[in-house]
Length: 547
Image 1: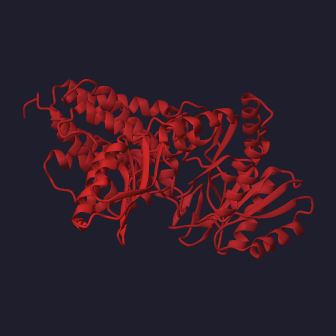
Image 2 (image 1 turned 60 degrees about the vertical axis):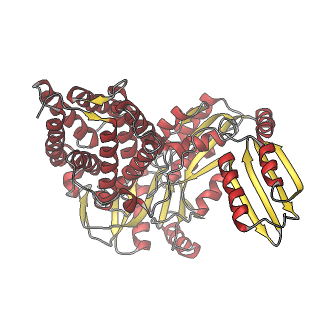
Image 3 (image 1 turned 180 degrees about the vertical axis):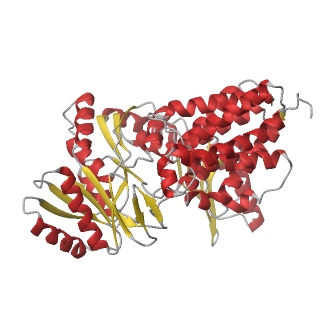
């Protein structure tokens, strides 16, 4: 093949959509590679939703989009929709594509190699403590292998083959670099997801068909993009809200005339409602030409109860009101479960994002929530180790001051909120909240979804397992016994029985169940204080805090 062969914008778009489709098709298998044998493996799901956001952005481009435009849309869409650590890393890899393809109409071998290198570098920089044996390693090995081959004169198609070959080799080696993978008997799930996307790229480039992307994602809601400040007024395209009734319709008016009127309004604006009933038509439309709307309506009949509101002026008044009432600080927490939600609200948290295990919020949704809080500075509590990276990146999509408190568990988030003071400075609050994290030991009780070995312990599918700070600590056959064993270990590790133990009971557990466990443990640890609170969290029978 000609070493000067190139990939155009249209082909690049098809490759990305094919990669997203293949990933969506295989996401369940990638989820199952979770190192932890718990029922919340979500790497495949997170990466797939990140890709869906990228595809959403790409499909808004014109048909003749250049490679630069496609890569920019890929990067921005992935960043907005990135979920979980794997999704954020994927968005950084695609940021490399955007940087490398800048100004290019077509992609040749040199640009493809540069994109992989720049992407890998960006991904490593995004992670505070990069670990080898992960998606990072797979991306780096691919970039290095492709760079070497490109320097030997290989064309872009040959490089695509090398991406898969070197990626497969790197993925197979991940258990040798990361002991927890070898112990659990799995390869890295993020690396598998990345390679699946690249396989989609190659299939598209070779002209091979993949099951329709639309069919694969038809059951999933469309990705929402709401990172812009909802109160800025910048998103108001049509400025006048016009509402009225058309009464005493002209005798010659038929249903087709009302339908034609509706079609005219849809060309003039949005939020169109035209509802007819017994000789009367109710009309609602947002447009920039209310006079034109009324002229069209007068062809049908008489106008009644007319109301026209200037939404831009309303927005200006709202902005002024918000500015007058703007606080110095606000709190945003990721939460899961009705009881946990209520507790955060009682601790003066301004806004909650539903998330945590099984459904990590996107960068875009975190940024949107930050923007909606009427405060100059917003403290963000991810409350899950798999959301911290997304929370870090969300600061790029907002003008507010964002202070990330790196909480990895719900108990840590609650402890941080309790240390917060509206009378302290940003720096004092940040220090106090981060200090509170270190003073709480977090536990959780759930069930194993497969046989595995982890942290030197063997567990069987269906066993109850107890985690301490996200590490497997105990296992058993009943929820009550496993929870008791977990609390015993947490208190023993702490080395002081004079502590407070809080049990947050989840879905399927009752206050009576939790209180029985607390009463039993109280007889063993007389110096400890036990509290029982409703959490309502899914998948986890109990969250436990010892402090």
